Image 1 (cartoon, rainbow, N blue to C red):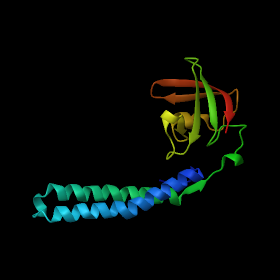
Image 2 (image 1 turned 180 degrees about the vertical axis):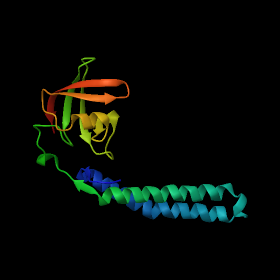
Image 3 (image 1 turned 90 degrees about the horizontal axis):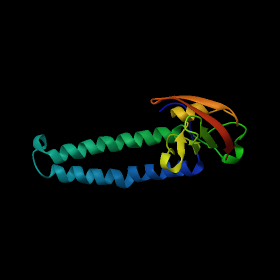
Image 4 (image 1 turned 60 degrees about the horizontal axis):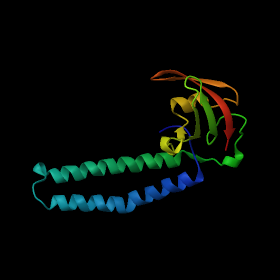
Length: 157
């Protein structure tokens, strides 16, 4: 992960909490699984040992990824944002010019993105296409299904 990672204070706390759990009880559990598998004999033909070592690799990669995200995190506060244009943490009400359907999204960091909750990443195609736009402007976004046009109806926090 490179560059600045914008997150809310709550998300940064969640990331730190998750990192603490991974480094403590998570590592202890994997060590226990490896020790248990080791007791079962020959390590060359021990599938449980191989699986536990692989799980350890994934676990350590997750820790490294979280550490990197926390190291590059910059906390942003909604009250400091300019709502005259779309930026991170903006809630944007859009009209799809093709279908006339109205949708509302909040632009967030990759860690906070959750489409079901209406939160899209600022690094997604739609997120990138909306950044910097003002109310009344039309954002043209290239998507796998073709060109999408969204008219920005409202920007709020």
